[in-house]
Image (cartoon, rainbow, N blue to C red; front, side, top):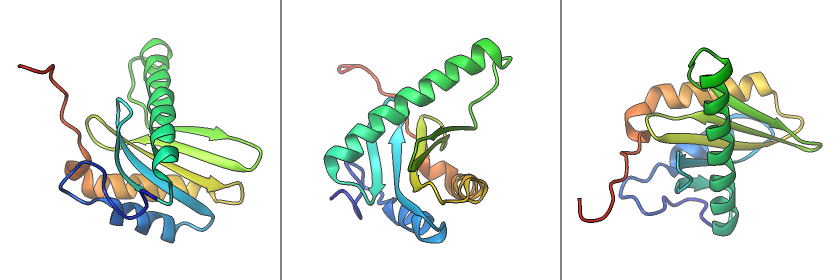
Length: 138
C-alpha cells in the first residue's frame, strides 16, 4: 500500500493526507498528485489504485480547466466533484502544478470535506507545488 509514504520525493507529505482523512468523517483516502497525473503522496490507497486515481484526477482537472477557459471567463478551477452511487470524488488545486484528490463515502458532508481540503491546501501550499518538467537534456 502506498499508504503512509511519499512516492519519489524526499519530502513526505503523506501525514497531511492522513490528517485530512482522519478529520473528515466518512472520507476514505487522499492523494496528492502532479497536475500531469503522477502520484506525490497518498493515504489509504494501494500503489496501482493510487496511480489509476492520479491519472483519472489529472484528466478531470484538465477538463475542468478547459471548461473554465471556455465558459468561465478564464477562471481558475477551485474544485471538481464527482458524485457516484456510493462514493464522492473531490479534486482540487493544491498549488502550482499539483492537485489534491479525496475519495469519501456518500455519507460524507461535502461542505466539510471541501472546506478541510481548502484549509489544508492554504496552510501548506508552498510544499505542495510541483515544478514544471523539462525535457531531458535541457
